[in-house]
Length: 147
Image (cartoon, rainbow, N blue to C red):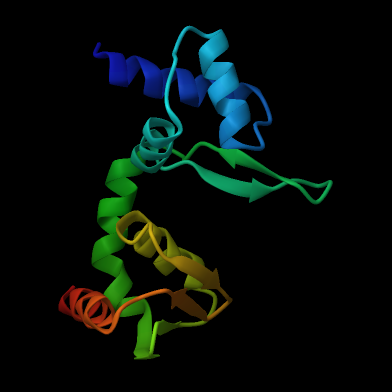
């Protein structure tokens, strides 16, 4: 097993066992388990594993492991997203993706996997990406409509 695979397994063990609220806390737990990682490496690992933050009953948030194989889930979602989009429109640095009812979070999962350097606001039937250039916005819309 490669060092990366061992680190991914350790991350999954930690988040399944403990309520981890932040990347810094996860880095501390990894360090305790013998894995010294930079914030950039940990961010990349979280994306690759498919970890997401979920709400806790006390109003906070914690990392949660994806069910099953996260890479396969994301790949399947990329094929489903075009069918979930109702429209895509933008102006300036904004891109608004309207989705079918309550499907915004599914589209957000794919968008976040591809466009990590933008701000994203997710609603029940829409997503707003903030900070896009006109060219990036056009490429994103074209990529989604191509399927």
